[in-house]
Length: 440
Image (cartoon, rainbow, N blue to C red):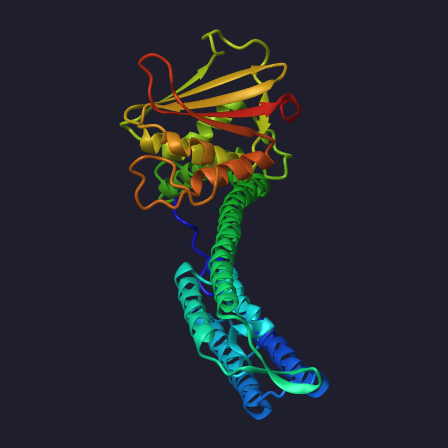
C-alpha cells in the first residue's frame, strides 16, 4: 500500500517529521558559543591557564558570524534539507576540532563535546548524512590525538605544560571512537523507529480522514434525499394530473409522459441515496450484521478470477448458535477490514475464505487466502509500519496491515496473524476478534 499523498500546497508527513527547523540548530549553536566562550574566560582569568585567547576567541567568533549570517538571510521558521542540516552540523564539528587543536587536543577534557553534533545528527538526519558526520568526527579525533598545541596550566604556582602519557591519550582516542560510533548508531536507530511510527500514524490518519469524508458524503446524500422527497412527490402528482387532462393527440402529450418518467426516475435515485448509512449512528443501518459488514468491505476489491466465500460456521464447521451480532458501521471498521480483505484478494491464487463465528464471549472473522502466505520470519513483526508482509510484494511500503491493525484496534478488535497449517492447506490466515462488549 502506498503512502497517501497530501493535497497540493500541504506538507507531506515526511516534510513534517524529518527536516529540522533552522531555529533549532541556530539555538543549539548559540548555546555552544556561550559555553565555549565562558569556558575559555574562566580557564584563563580564574584558573590561570595561559591559553592563546586571541586565536581561541577568534575561532568561537566564526560560529557567531555564521549564526548571525544565517539568521539574517533566512527566517527562523525555515526548514533545512537533509544536506543543509548535515553541512550545518559538519561546520560545528570542524569548529570545535580547531578549537581543541589550540587548547590541548584530546588532553582537553571538553574533547568529549565532539560527540554532541554526531548525536544530534543521528536523531534528525538520514543514515547517509549521519555516517558522513560520524566519519568526519572520527577523522578529527585521530588528528587531534597526534597534532595539537599543548595545554598550558598552572602547577605549584608556576606555569607548566599539562602533558599526559601517550598511552593514556591513545585510550582517550579509542574511547571517543567507540562512543562516537555507538552514539551515532544507537541514536539513529531509535530516531528512525520514531520517524517510521510517526509517518505510519500520519498515513493512518490520512486514510481515516479519506474514509470519513466518504462516509460524510453518504450521510449528506441521505439527508438530501430526505429533503427532496416531498417536492418530488408533488411534482409527480401534478405530472399525473397533467397526463389525465392532456389529450393523447396533443402536441404536449409526449412532454407530459417524459415528465412523468423522469420524475419516477428521480424518485428511484433518491430512494437509493436514502439507504446510505449515516456516520452519526442515527440511520437504521448504522449497525449491521457482521456478514453484511464483510460483504460491503470486500465489495470494492472483488475480482472475477478470485472467489470470495463467506461462511458462518465454528471451527468444526457447525453453524454458530444465537442471533448474529451487529457491529457499528464506522469508517475505522470499514477501512480496516477493507485493507485486510484487499490484501487477501491481492495475494490469493483463486480463493479467499472468510469464516464468521460468534458466541456469548464475542465474535471472530477468519480470513484465509490460498496464496503464498506470510514469510515465517516476519510473522512476529506483522503490524509494524513499513514492513512488506508477503513474498514478492515489490513496491509496497508495508502500511496496509499496520493501518488495519490501528483502525480495528480503535474499533475494539484484536488481530492475529498466522499461516494455514492444516493438511493440504496453504496461504495466510488473519483472525479478527471482538469481545462481547463491542457487539449487539
